[in-house]
Image (tube, rainbow, N blue to C red; front, side, top):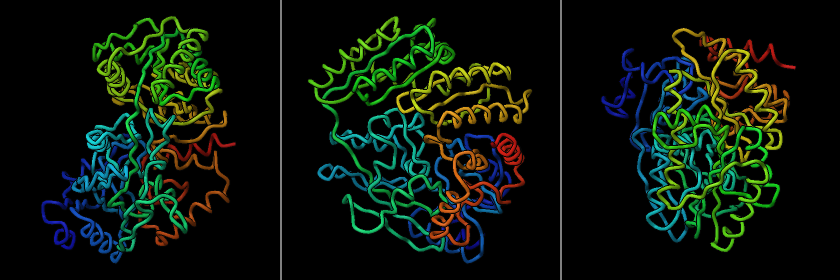
Length: 473
């Protein structure tokens, strides 16, 4: 402890039980206190902390804003948490090179704001962008609504500075694309802190589009809205973003924020296109025709930038608004083929009804990234039963040819479900890639991979292991 204080300063190291309470959880349900927390203020301090832990044989868990939903920052195996909260500098915005250099503790929205000042924008825009940080976005390969056209974080990271598990500082990638040699950047993006601690990121910025058009289409049910979304892409137009809200979410948003969405809508489809004015003019006509052909009862276009921003604000506040119904929720982010969406949603809603839970659906329908939200009250309803319903939903998505996660990461939440998708040989190859960076397994232990005892004393972890093994076929 004294060594950590010497590196970071007395005010930046925590070890008392009452101080550790706020570091023992993220936005999910897994909880476990770290043995200590260090909050370094520079790359050199991060390296010194990691080396000290390595020499002592102590595990490390990197942590950003703590907004993750997969238990990725829960400290297992006596680990210390290393927080990047003080690494909050935007080092440079290079308009000519269309690039930003930032530290991991910078909020996503701050990068967007800084880029906009020079006529550029940063595409990844998770719903948590006002509070989630770039380091966490890189760790989970976050996406957001505009991932449909622009891709997730991995498509926008040019280079990474990272402290390796032995305390060495390494740099991967850089300011130029397609550097010779092995490209380790895509491996690091989405590695959830299991390879090292990121201390600097080089980000790709894009020019602001000439024209943006945002449409709201109202449907009598989810099924017709989902079919309309598929029809748009099948018709040759790939929107910048395409989001869907169900009736439960619409009603809650109206009550919480007075956004005046149609209260009787079965579903709402939000479609945004970007490009040259001539392109968006043609696409707009095609999109409106397809929306109406597939059952839209009303189609509106945002009349101004302010109206467009209000629509996106409503979408991104949907998750928070659901607390008006129940104080707790369980949220997954499985991905399914877009064409299978209507049938999957029917099964998802049927599972919620069978268990007696209110469910809200608001999701990235354009790329099939589901976000079903099971609403409950943890004071009176057992979490194990909610997890069982959630595991059934996850199984439906996998059986439809889907993936375990679109942007939240695997973490502790879904590590035991990995064999549903990957063979033993697949998992072994992943472990060997991790071991090339961290042969001692001290960096964020117990995450991503199934099995192991690092986090076995967490009650929810035991429950998920039983569910995963019981449903596996």
